[in-house]
Length: 425
Ligand SMILES: [Zn+2]
Image (cartoon, rainbow, N blue to C red):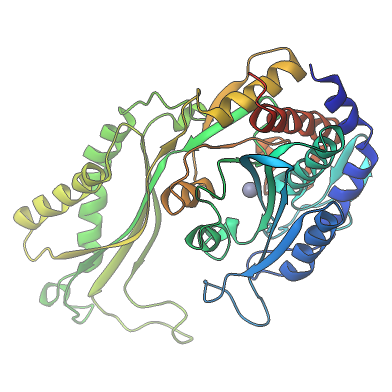
């Protein structure tokens, strides 16, 4: 164990808690993207006091960006004394809405029984605070370190990351030679390394019919009944087929170690809130189904789409007047960083030293900002690692454990030691 680093982090426990509390007090709720500017400025000011060069980059033109709700990101860089690689810690500063059921003030940053409570404490201001303290401790122990350390606080992760990491990646912030290794301190539990995520295909399937009077539906053609036929085929064929596809990806929870499909919504016929009173009796001439298909590293997106399209094509042959259109809404390819990638090995060394055990390697069922770093930045030496219990994210009375933050900050500091000082994992 690198005792000097561990001590340097532990000596800063009070600062770590205070930093986490300060971050929680910015109510960075997304949507709409509240208090992004003040929170980013706070992070930037804290880091510039520690010798980081700080820049603020607005995700101009991104969804939700406006003068009232600017998408303000902060990127800070501290150059070392000698040439070497760059290690980047990326955290999102946005949090989801509070929802009901809180017994504490979600934005007070209450400290009680070894925990810090608040919206975003676990997801992921505790992780951001841990990475800031880890960097400060590392710099104190190794003031002449080679390479560079970067820390970013980015927006909109909870709504897709377009004004945040995607925007920065499109400007070269997540590419070589600027950056070599990225750690995303998402709350995945302090002894687990998240290597990536499953793929996503969101699409809208529309069936079309013909409007007619509801008392004589035989004169029209119901788009809703056509969608019913699509759903029946999904139940009979697609769901069992997806269930049978298992993966070598270590996805948690285990139920997600296969392909899944969610029917997000169905919209058909007249809107109910169009006017007060009874709607007019009509045959629906359009029905739309929004699907959320999550897929595995063993599947390619053409096959994933082909499974759905072949069902629709068959229905077109079999079913009179069946007509459809498919619109892609979002595509994200599955990602899995290898366990022997330098950043994964560096974090693994930290976990071994702090917890005297091998890390668990996991894959997230849903995506996070790593997708933009891989696809836009073409940088693949990236993992997610941070404190906080994943299940608490987005829940009422969300909290992060103080000891969890301290221990994961030590793991992060040891990761810096490995990647910058070149200590063998
Ligand atoms: Zn998160």
